[in-house]
Amino acid sequence: MSNLSLVEVVRRLIELRSRGVQMTLLAVCPNSSAVLEAAVKAAAENRSVMLFAATLNQVDRDGGYTGWTQAQFVAEMRRYAAKYGWNGPLYPCLDHGGPWLKDLHTQRGLSFAETNAEVKASLTECLKAGYALLHLDTTVDRSLPAGSPPEIELVVERAVELIAHVEAERARLNLAPVAYEAGSDEVHGGLVEFGRFQQFLSMLRRRLNERGLGGIWPAFIVTQVGTDLHTTRFDAQIAARLFEAVAPLGSLIKGHYTDWVENPRMYPVTGMGGANVGPEFTTEEYLALQDLCEKEAALADTRGMAPSGFMQALEQAVVESGRWRKWLQPGEEGREFAELNPERRAWLAQTGARYIWTQPGVLAARERLYANLRVAMNEPHAYVVRRIQAAIDRYINAFHLFDSVEYFK
Image 1 (cartoon, helix red, strand yellow):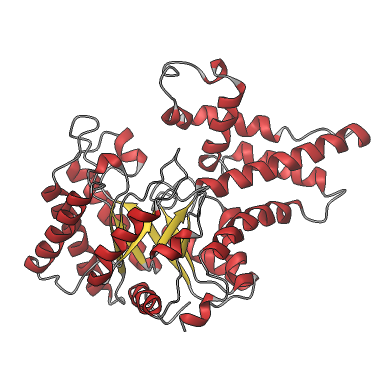
Image 2: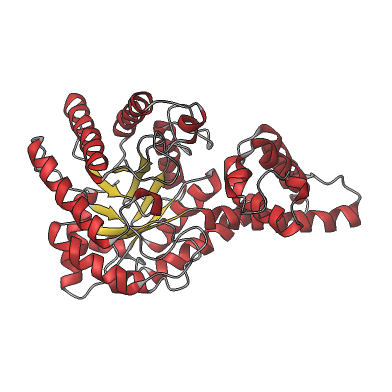
């Protein structure tokens, strides 16, 4: 939906910055249909460039937890673009594509050869679907003791192998060039220390040249800029230093864990090229639905209707999924969900909601909720989309993306 590839967009961003135009691209993690719709609507109404960073947990050949294959995800994105009359630049992207980064690969105890083969097959489907950017993250090795990062040489070698696979598949399928994203902001990946980060870049350049891939270089490099799942303060000083390191190479820094960041307006100031946001939008969807349940309760009291039981169905689905256990804190291990305090249960339910939006019981309860509310509201779903869009608009404004399409024609 744009004539510019993401590689060209990054080059344009670097050139614009030299002219005093500061801008950071927003990558929305499409962890539900409502989030995807809200993001496309936000792009249309703000005339903004928009990226969509989908993990293999979310979108994959098996449908992921959204229920979408790569082709279905892109088709859904385009359907919303048609709904909102938008033909501007929307870029579907892969986030964290690498060995053992799909939860099922770890749960099934796949070997490196097995998980690598699965990742390669998924990368091919990303290409076929028209993905514009592939984040190749090879910083996880489940064969090592917990908390032990693989050697940088191995991280680089595996990344180059995946790039070589993509380039071979791209040639076989006669497809246009694709942009790459490399690195990780996870501490366990071993690349967040500046010296090791520089070593990674140097080694990656050398190995790409040695493999005859010298014309390939990541558009985005991911590393730590101060934020994580529980930290919301962006480190502007570190980000500016990283920008100075990678811009001469033709790359920009991309931050993950941008959710609820306290100082988003510092991103374009420091030269950040992109930022991923995901859990925050799931929380907005959860809170919007919680609000609708309160409205439904008021109607039930005055009109005698049977409540949908949506929040109970959602919590039950989160508990049954078992995914809430991944966020247990010290002292909570081994405890059942019902044994946790109400505040923790609420946090785990809203954080884990993205994994179960498409569960049949949750979908049925959501439709009952909407049906109950339609006696007093025109369209309850539109209320949810607006709530999510408001959170997205905050980043569009902070990242100087309003009417940004004018710079990328």
